[in-house]
Image 1 (tube, rainbow, N blue to C red):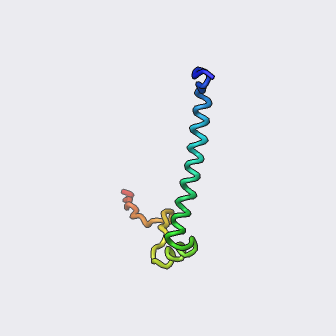
Image 2 (tube, one colour; image 1 turned 90 degrees about the vertical axis):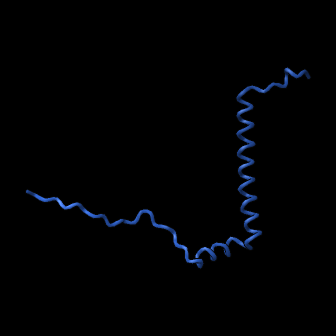
Image 3 (cartoon, helix red, strand yellow; image 1 turned 120 degrees about the vertical axis):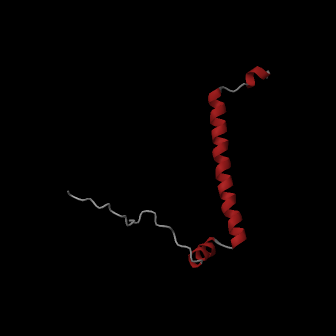
Length: 74
């Protein structure tokens, strides 16, 4: 087989890079969760630590009291 027959067209290159990128991302996410579980014990324990640590989720959508400008009708 000659080297000229091994050339991939741009569509094949794009699909190969995309597939390997997605596979690598999924593997990285899986390993990250697995490593965190090894360090903290289990996911349930980590969630309990977050709840008992005193930190509350910030409620960004709560209404904020605003100072209304006084409009004089002269």
